[in-house]
Amino acid sequence: MSAAPIRKIAVNTGGGDAPGLNAVIRAVVLSARSRGWEVLGIRQGYDGLMGDGTGILDLDENAVRGITHTGGTILGTSNRGNPFQIDNGRGGTEDRSSQVAERFRELELDALVAIGGDGSLSIARDLHERFGLPVVGVPKTIDNDLAATEYTFGFDTAVATATDAIDKLHPTAQSHQRVMVVELMGRYAGWIALYAGVAGTADVVLVPEVPFRLEKVCEKIVEREARGRHFSIVVVAEGAAPLGGKMVVEKTQEPGREVKLGGIGQWVGQEITRLTGKETRFLALGHLQRGGQPSAFDRLLSLRFGAAAVRSVEARDFGTMVALQANQICSVPLEEATRRIRTIPLDSDVLQTARDLGTCLGD
Ligand code: F6P
Image (cartoon, rainbow, N blue to C red):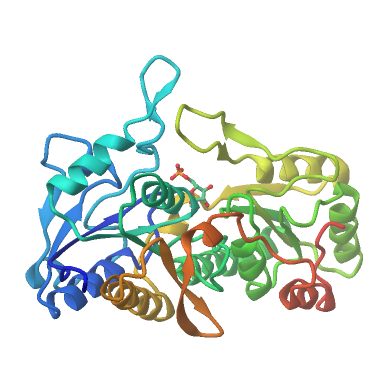
């Protein structure tokens, strides 16, 4: 017996935004509409499936006109709306996932294309495993830390933004003979810091994968001084930590939310001044890394992912995520994609390139 035809699908965007989200939405909508399907957009991650019904909108060709190059997401997003762990306002959480599954069925949806990072895709995986919801994931995050895909969209743009910032810090560092410390995002992975640090020719790059020693960082700065280079650029991933030390947490965990990292760059800057006497300035690039127009690479990847997700729906390849491997789009089980995060392998040629170029990695 053949399965009933696909008629109506939904798409949502969850977790921190990333440049390229709108391009994925456009590709999903146009690819689905060309097959004669209806598309609903769910607002603010999974919140739109839990509220009063106002969180759902019709997406036709007109709704996705002219958005490929724009940042943010026309659907809105949330990194506090995990239906399995909704903040109950009393310091705990409650499980409202069955409400999501019910609403999904009421809307007579044949599939959900869930665009997200490890958090939102884990929710999609659990909705698939627990309630049999037909989901296909699309890997999004500036952190580039999802297993089973070589790139997530958003990463390339974040690296370009961070590299541009490092380029702009160079002349002021040089003019004032200062050490400039810039903290970059990436959570528990150092991809953004490593790629932008190497591309921006930082003198020191500290990433979570390589625990650092302050003496090594200071040695590099002092050695540059001795060579007449009276300034240094130090790039610190927000998840970097000293050998034997802990990551610095800006905010402790709120119910149903990830901890928020931040502050390690400032500490490194203060310690550099204390240990070397050099004047230091600190900057956390923050959410600028999530903004702006997606790069051409991210746009194309987003469009490829979105179209491929619709092909997965058509093939009823559910419980999967579209991924990029050897520059080809493929499909991987969501379970595999969310089992662990992908950090920089210690034999990465980019790490080795940094070492070959004399960049201090703090070890
Ligand atoms: O996962 C993307 C990311 O930007 C991380 O790099 C960063 O740690 C986190 O999100 C910041 O989250 P928020 O938007 O809650 O400040």
